[in-house]
Image (cartoon, rainbow, N blue to C red):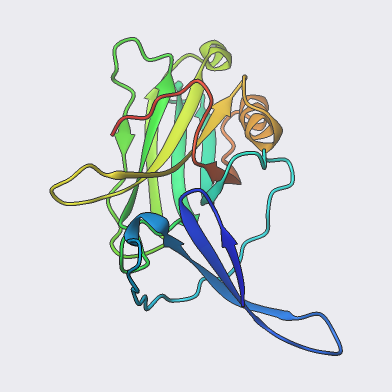
Length: 210
């Protein structure tokens, strides 16, 4: 078993030790540090999640919070951008039960009229939610190069503020796979382009409000 401490959580990885070859990875879980109190022992009964491959083009200076699969397609017939929120994987656990109740929000910015917000349904008690929801933004193709798509994942809480899990920004000012995904969408009208993206605990220059 290996333990990594992070800014907001402890990541625990379980492996099968093999003296003659490479140890085999079994699974891992994360425990949010805010659930712990000084000098108090607390037991957790968490399910292990499979480890996902890391995208080497992502910025590792930001804490990884899980991954999200997003699809992009510019529809020339409808004259707009179709954003698909497919699924998330290995999200950070925000609740005491070792899970989260995640949902996803999307914005197309600049958004002067503040009308670009879309939100998925909430998926209960999971770190690997399946959404399969699509949102449509009516926009001229030529204007897409001036826009940024912000995608944020939240943990739904009843009676208190929802917890921010992670986010990703796609657009002309992005880099790595985030920029490539946006360019692939622009270069391939009417073709759905799906990509996995690493969520981070912050996006520079952006303020997230639920």
